[in-house]
Image (cartoon, rainbow, N blue to C red; front, side):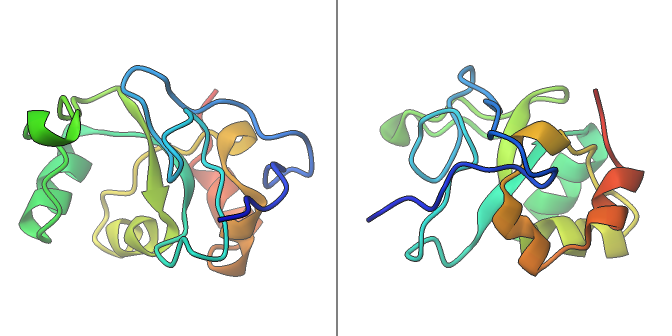
Length: 123
């Protein structure tokens, strides 16, 4: 798997999303991606309680620890590299988490327009 260039949606270098918990398709703390990342895990979000409940109801439980995978479970305020399509689904349901633009990979723009991401930007 060859990573795509590490550029963010603003055109600059991709910033880290989170190392605690460790996130990213490559588990390198960044929302780096590659052709094999069919889920496009490129949106760096700060998860909310509402989003975590939505994700669990949609069949993707991100809050329950899974020690067998080295996953401690997310809690509100944690940052996570989320699938761009899941962010759109959460947006449509009124529970989109805030987005860290500098840590969101430019590949996201194939799915989500920049102006929409900017409306949910966090510091």
